[in-house]
Amino acid sequence: MKIKFLSIIIIILFFSCKEKQEISSINSENWSKRTVNITSKDSLEFGKSYLSIYSQIYSNTEHRTHNLTSMLSMRNTSELDTIYLLRAEYYDTHGKSVRKYFDSPIYLAPMETTEIIIDELDISGGTGSNFIIEWKIPKNCPEPLFEGIMTSTMGQQGLSFTTHAKRIK
Image (cartoon, rainbow, N blue to C red; front, side, top):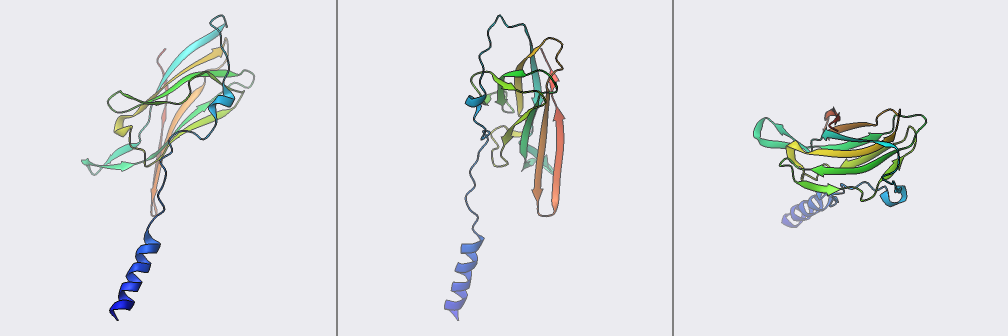
């Protein structure tokens, strides 16, 4: 009887162990395939935007947090012009840089969107994380749109909300 009980416990433990999840906060897209050379002589308008992102939020008290999957959506709103993203840098709650996502300017074709995903297991940003995005656009081109989408599901419960970037330069 003890052997059957022990065998059942071992089988339950074996099947209940979850596969180790990799924390992958860097977009799988190969940024190097999107790089472009922009000279200082180009007649492009420079802009800088700030976007709040939440990799964690408080739940019930200040001592309990809930992890979120966060997405930075970077959208070219122009139907005609290509735009250029110079920098997308992720900062933590204390204002320290966590990571930069590309080292050279990249392009977004007209009406194109690209994303950066912060995995739910990646809590390096904390409750007050944010992005700085620098960009260049042709004159008379509509500004790009940057949004943060945060989601989490647990059982039958779901949580989602969005944030919108603010131009700071």
